[in-house]
Amino acid sequence: MKNITIHEVGLRDGLQMEKMHVPFETKAAWLQQLIDSGVDIIQIGSFVHPKYVPQMAETDALFRQFALEKSRPDGLIYSGLVLNEKGLERGLDCGVDMFCMGVSASETHSMKNTKMTVDEALPRIIKMAHLAEEANKSVQVSVQSAFGCGFEGPIAVSQIERIVHKYVDAGLKNISLADTAGHASPAQVEQLLETVLKIDNSLEITCHFHNTYGLALANCFSAMKMGVTIFESAFAGLGGCPFTAVAGGNVCTEDLVHMLQRTGDCTHVQLNSLLNLAKETARFFSREMDGKIYRTGEITYQNK
Image 1 (tube, rainbow, N blue to C red):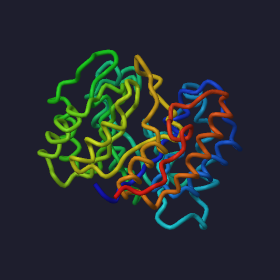
Image 2 (cartoon, rainbow, N blue to C red; image 1 turned 90 degrees about the horizontal axis):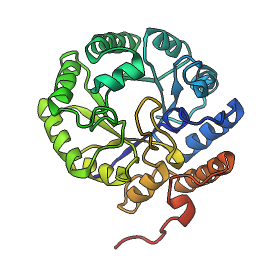
Image 3 (cartoon, one colour; image 1 turned 120 degrees about the vertical axis):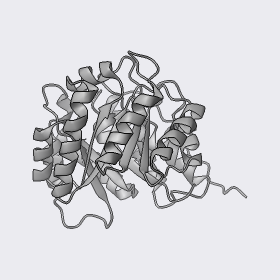
């Protein structure tokens, strides 16, 4: 349970549900605070049509301002979400380091999100992943709605296995399991990870949990017990998928970092920077955020 990597997705997954538009200057300031906090990977945005997700209209400009800078911190990775070939082309043009793309295990969610069935989306995503790799870019492929669907309910484990097998057969081993609807429970997390790792125990698994029903941190802990070391989270607990039935925020980055630091992990991340950002976010949106630690403050003594 050491050396946890934080993949911060607040600027993308966190903002896509917000109706109040966040201007470019504010996004840029928040991005700089995330850089200064020392998180490992920052998802700057998604390459989607602003007609469907207006909050992502500045994605290309943000990448050009930050990803193409030569003075960025060593080791910092900028990721971007793409849904189609046009998005991949845009991302290649403006400096994306790691492309995130995937398919939903739910037919209903897949149609709402991409207007494709699972079997239509799979070969297309795999082809896009190979194109990104040919351009010397890192790729993370995902299984969305892996722990349940707000429309269909439980998703058969065999469906998750089938998608993961397709990825592995295509040589894609950096795989995110996403709890898009927030239905996961700790025991389910352990069981699914055990099943997936039997397919190939060399997989680099990322977990992406939503806190729709209050179990996100508990699910992270269960995933860590199974050896997962990469987690996607959002500052201030922002987020939610606009194409699911009941949208809930992502696991909160500052709460996750606080939990990890109490175990002696994730000490490279500056928690105070994240707490200040959460407070700014609350002021901007004029509401309390879902996170806890930005309100209570951190526990500063060390466990013995």
